[in-house]
Length: 347
Image (tube, rainbow, N blue to C red):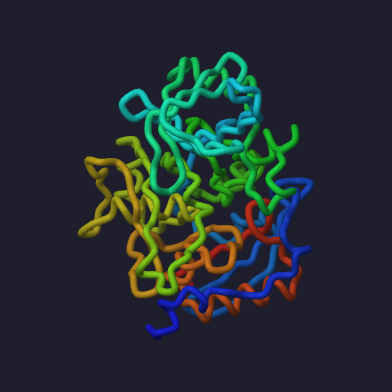
């Protein structure tokens, strides 16, 4: 490992703005697929619907089945001023929910905000600028209200974060099940029922984990040295049945960085087990050895992001940036609605 591998600025790269995807491919599985075979150092360029052609029979693909919930609401202060809230999680802590609030003026303890029938009251103010609020709707009632009134939270680099009706479907995997994420596990957006049929025909198995993606996934690395970056903590779960599949598998491919973070957090001494706290703040970068998987399917990530550093922990920083340069030259589309990359470590 080189000294440069630990410097945030070393993970920068040039990306023409027109390659930042604003919409998904017209058909999900017709996105481009870059296949990088690490041992032979070869690169193939294909389409995502051909992915089964590259995976050996018996491979276990692991998906994150978390579902994005509509969490952005417009409302007002009792004085009549505009207010916007972004729920950061559906997991309450002592009856309080973590949120971001955007309003004019200073916010203080006890302030109340109205979002139609939903009332929020600030109970705690955190150093990072977020809040814990008490709500008059909780649990399923809160989720039902958000499902009917709130907007899907798309990233700021997609149409300046302004979602429309099509994003409700586009920014969700076809297998999303458990609501709780404020960002989609985007590597899974390329999968269709037809792709799953082709995988099944090839003898490729599926296992699922649930990690609720928090707003921290968009948090830029502000520290000069990546080792000084504090990673966000996210909750996850794996069923006993899926743990069994993982412990029987010989060739495991993680679909997405969120899935890899779960697997790496559960892997020790050659086997997978669910830790008691069922949450992780693991940060993978060059120098940290990834042991739990033989392959990764992922999108193309932002410069200087923890996700780019994670990819670099598998194939190295220089090789990752070289692959990204090739992707730019071949007009791959980047970020959440962009194209896909598959890293095969043993080929």
